Length: 230
Length: 230
DNA sequence: CGTGCTGTTGAGGACGATCAATGACGGTGG
DNA sequence: CCACCGTCATTGATCGTCCTCAACAGCACG
Image (cartoon, each protein chain N blue to C red):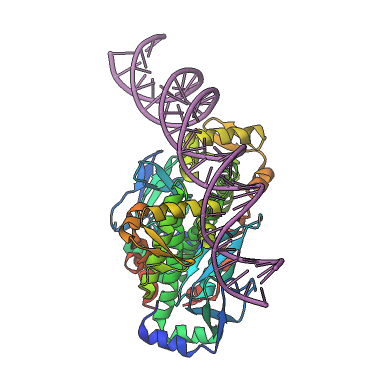
């Protein structure tokens, strides 16, 4: 998400690397750990357990995302691996040094916070009053867009139907039926446990997806811009 | 939302006051006006028109809220008066002067942006997989909490059932039935066109409402705090 | 060879949308 | 004063979407 120089500087500060496999927690409910986790590879998700035991997925994380940014704003919650993940750990102290050294870093962090906010707002629109078909389509479009931003071209999204269900807020059974409808429409295809998007145009038009909300930097108003140059 | 000294300074810069009555737009879809509107009195809402003509209300605004903060993050949208409103207009130039003069102002603006993000995230949780009864209850709890923050004690919320419907994403008909259920539970009462909360405890427990997410300042992590002292 | 996770399929039922009609109230113009 | 209109609230009936319960198939892993 950051530019080259800053990225290298950040990667330099990674003291320790961990890995996690599907289902394992990356960041638990520790109040305030002394370190920050940066997702280096794989897909993770930020979720919350509801009273009835259901799992509500707030967001999916890709390589380059700071895990704790997502947690702070959702107040409470867990970050867990969705696919095999590799995680870098950075000390808070080091990160703060970096921020004073590279002011652009702070803006980058802000930008990703804003992006997450924008995503959840967009989701809000799409969850209410939209059919399950559109919800799922939109969710998949969002993943495609995020993957592109991180430089992944493969049209294969390694999410299970359960992941979709928990993220879309629909029952597994209904996700399955919806999924099959998308199969019969030749929009998706099955690749083992993963989902392949075979007709992106139709997916986008079905979801009424407008990826612009993911590219916010230009859209930020003068106040945000102000914070960048001090 | 701001503290005394800053508030006075801001109010001092108000060049012009406008008023709007129910339904009138306060901020239209102007790309980038040269001024910023501050809601001084009344209730407004930030909404968006969907393709099918339905109105989706993103947020309700109370006295002290900057209208444009809400618009920037929802990308596009309109701010309209829900009750009779009084609006103060501030030039961008003046506002920027104020920000350099009172650094705390910037944090205040950020905080309210974050609060809005937090609200929409919370809404997301409550819209999906919650019954209409709980959705409405939660929405009303949110309004009560926001009103308290602004210093309004009256338990009478001047929203029509249509406003509720558009904000909750439910049909007017169903809102009406839900509303009557809340009446028969002795949780709400009718006061003319407005809604009165007669049993707040039960409303809160029904909605499973945890107002903590509205008081974010303490929750903000070190990165946010950093932006306050430079 | 059992156990667990994921996916699949059927049947019944709850919730909320939509359509349609009606009532209540306030304002406006004749 | 009254007829007319617009907004908001109310109520009934029907229907589609999605949930829940329940059973079962495929597959990996021990």
